[in-house]
Amino acid sequence: MKSLKHILGLTILLFSSSCQDDFLDQVPDDRLTIEQVFLRRETSEQYLANVYNYIKDESMVTNNAPWIGLSDEGDVTYDRPGYLTFLMNIGNWSAASGYYDNYYGDYYKGIRSATTFINNIGNNPQFTPELITRRTAEARFVRAFLYFSLLRTWGPVTILGDELIPGDLEPNDAKLHLPRNSYDECVDYIVSELDLAGQDLPLHWTTQESNSQQYGVGEFGRATKVACMALKSRVLLYAASPLVNGNQEYAGFTNKDGKQLISQQYNPAKWERAAKAAKDIIDLNILSLYKKNDAQGNFDPLLSYRGIFLDAWNPEVIFARVANNIAGWERASSPRLASGFASTGPTQQMVDAYHMANGLRPVLGYTSNGSPIINAPSGYSETGFTAAATKYTLANTYNMYVNREPRFYANVNFNGVQWINTSEGVKVIQTYNTGESGPAGSWDHSRTGYINRKNVSPAANPRTGVNTARPWVMFRYAEILLNYIEALHETDPSNPDILQYLNDIRERAGIPQFGEGPSPLPTPSPDAVRELIRHERRIELAFEHMRYFDTRRWKIAEQTDAGPFYGMNISANPPEFYKRVVFENRVFRKSYYFFPIPQPEINKNMNLVQNPGY
Image (cartoon, rainbow, N blue to C red):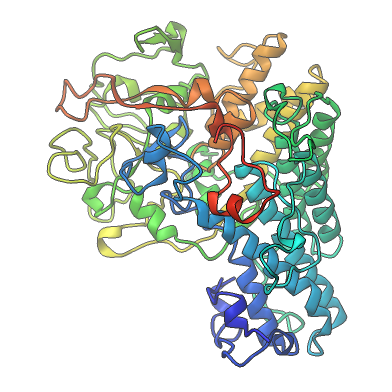
């Protein structure tokens, strides 16, 4: 009988600091078999903690979560050989590249581990029937999450179900040569698993016991019914999108027996299903967009938006990862004046996307040479500097960054902005050539002239080793609203819910709602409203690892993620610094809509077909 260590790595997920002493304080020894593991409460809980740990920590912005640097919203400075973003953005990417292959295997290891837990936990004499039911549902949620992680990245995959494939089969055994399921089959399986898990889970983290005698450990960070519903909403939204809903460019994407893996018939009912999944969450009436007041008791949009990620377990949070590398995220997103790496920078295209304070867009598009088409009524200017300070900017700030919407100041560090940690006095970020975070003399700099500020606490200071431990938010209510209005628009474009929830998000963002001030009502053109919804999603969910998957499911990545990418002129000092320059010419091939199945997996499984273009 194989030992637990042989079957499962012993990386541990800590659900909360309160459980470190009593929940995960022992590691099973090599003599403990799987059967023995599930006869004890402690080792069973530890096993499930390890299953949770297969959900990737996406606070790591390099190979662990490359999505920012592979999308048009951002750049990761470590675009160098050995990093996934470097390979893909220069077009040097194939099934044999190997830089993300282990994640494919890790997800399947997690799926196997979850199935092992589901199949064995019922034998634990130290668990009550109620606890067995709940923990089984948690493992089912994690397994569904891991299947979705595969689906969103590699496309249709092989669904294994509840039967565990023995680890000692001969290489030619038919059980090792399973074909891929279709995308729709994968979706239906994931959704059915989430529906089943949700029946046996507490509704929301607010209804989870934090230190009850029954459960004995902190429950925050575990699966809930609403977490199941949120993942279902995301899964169904992706399934309704153009990439996999009647995409005839995948007509030849079949298994070896001819089975179609991507539906060739557009089905509007998929949008209806996605809209309902999101609306079911809204109708629970237990979530809200997070809002905070300033010291004078007035609503503050910047504090509200920033607080979603800094104020743990606020009313917008649906599901969050408690164990994470938030210190690494904050250091990567901090300037060198705070001993940060300044390594994650918004692109100029992303900077241009943010509204002005009056709710209008500053840039409407670009000319053939990359110059911005400025929206004059917005008041935007790319010349001159301010004489006086404003609410969000210091005096002598370049006008490009003045009078922008609050989310811009919550998300973007630009040259001349004050660093958010003022414990050591006012310090100004300098991203130009010889500036404190510029390229002169250091590898640690932003190639765009901007540094990410989102999800960085004003109390954090990597230079002094101070970081603010908090959950990593993975699902939140604003996404659900955006999921709903996007899906609803595709089936019922005149539904008043679209404008209502779009305006709710703008109101929390601190910009005029459509129909107020200079912000016009959306045009009745379906294409125009669709673009407004997508634009609002781009801004609201920026740097949350959503944009990469959005441009792909919308089938627009060939336009958004290829060609010249712009930033400020970091090779110069002001005033020459304030000039748009190309920092990278990116390559996007049609094959990049999905990652390639790792070549070793293709070699092992005679019925596993490769993704198109590889």
